[in-house]
Image (cartoon, rainbow, N blue to C red):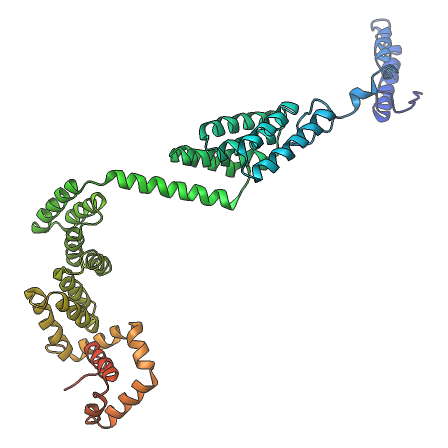
Amino acid sequence: MVKIRGPCWRVPVVSALICATAGLLFVDAGASAGPGLRPHASLSLASHLQPRPISAHRDERACTPTLRLRGAGDAGDAEGAEGAVKEKELGTEAYNNKDFETALAHYQKASELDASAMVYRNNMAAAYFGMRKYQECIDTCKKAVEIGKENRADFKDLARAYARMGNALVKLDDLEGACQEFENSLMEHKDPQVALKAKNARHAITQKAAQNYLNPEQAEEHRQKGNAFFKEGKWVEAISEYSEGLKRDPENHLIYSNRGATYIKVMDMGSALRDCDKCIELKPEFPRAYARKATVEILCKQVHKAKETVEAGLKMSPDDAELKEVQRKVQLQVMGVGLTPEERELRAKEAMKDPNIVSIMQDPVMRQVLEDMQRDPSSAQKHMQDARVKANIEILMAAGIIQTG
């Protein structure tokens, strides 16, 4: 029988019992095996089954785990850490008073007293930033990150160091580097303010690249190439050239006008309308933009809008022949000349998608006017004496909501 004593034995109870039983069986088998076997070999097994106690002289501290707090640093001594905190408080007081040089001196002293805490390096970097010494700020932040990683600093402290590097790089106009540091900061800790700075930096990079790409001379070359493709009926190639030209010169109203005309050819009315609007915005006195916009609106069955566009264009250029031709087309559309009943119905249906038309139709005064006109068409003359009612009736007639004849 094997006796197991105390918790200091290395062989567990169950394992010892199993091994001991196996040893006895082995001895019995050897005794009955005859002289040809070596029963004394079981003695070696039995000797290995003896559990060994742990030495009484073993250092108990070796078994005690060491608890280490993340971000606590490894202060050389309690007095040094306490002194570092006091220096930091003095530095923060000076920093809040915009006395960055004094603050820097205190933060440096705090870092000397507790060199393993990155927070003091972060404070030093903030002081350098306040002094507009951006490269020194960056170098100090890099050292802070190095110390922080060695001493398992808090994620937020690491994030602050990266973010401050990003701020300094923005000041040095290194937007690519700033983006990288902001991303590093967000990897450590998700801060909405830092995320916004990263977004702004990326936008600034895009804007800077676009600015560097500007070249009005090359824009005109692309416009001429686009015109050549347009004459050949190569609409897609023309649009590509016009688009490249606008990248080179986004303020060129002629390119917007030409691209708008090309979009009409491929029946992309939404893009055509946007280009015409942009052309009018850049050059309000350019009549062709109004003519092309009105053409788009006619094709979209929005004759009432085309009428307004033509009238606005004629105010800018009363004698423009192209605008007058489009005006004639608009008048024919308003009168319904050449339109089948189905086409008239379709035009009215499309017009009802316009919020302005819906608003007019829902106006209680206009509803009463329309009811009066439906009962007694001659009442229209009386209602047309009101300028507001007259304008609305003309819009409804142009839209095909009110039809004559």
